[in-house]
Image (cartoon, rainbow, N blue to C red; front, side):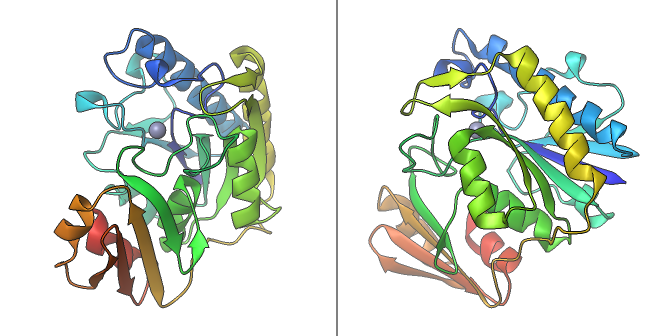
Length: 269
Ligand SMILES: [Zn+2]
């Protein structure tokens, strides 16, 4: 059983504000350790459920050389392999070789979720809303469509209550969720201490992988229409001339294609 762990930092237990998630901030080093140990918990759960190969891919944009590179390599479970990529969703090698399921660890809710700790979609500075064929989605939706493109279902989502709720609404009851904190606005949370959160995640990962028969890869639909409402007019103006992309309004673009993956690549990279 080959398992892809795709992870973000904002949904990790012990993390409540951006001083813990932005490279160069005083608490970032602590945040990285909390993040890495939570990934290790998911790795342990995966191997205990029968995984033979686990590949971890960090998609947290911490800034500079730490973007998609926030894991503390020295602390990672030696049984896994891990990916550092220049752009989120650019590495597809593990998926292309065949992947049985994906575990999403440390997720945050989509932009505009009032109880979502550090809620945003892709870029808190630049993006307001994202739709796949008229369904409002966040980063769980992006990751699910990304791995779904290659036939892999999402089996587990961990993060705050809001991100777990979002995952169930989008992917159905079959996905196991492990909430590790309850958001109090954007930069506060009532949390389960990291040590216990890791136990819950390890157990959740094992449970999620024990039976994959009820899970389907997520496909937002064919043909595919991806709409992005930006917070500015600069990005839409730049993207407007790409093939398959149309600027609907000054701050909004739509990318249309036969399938989600093509529509995504038309504007995202
Ligand atoms: Zn992040």
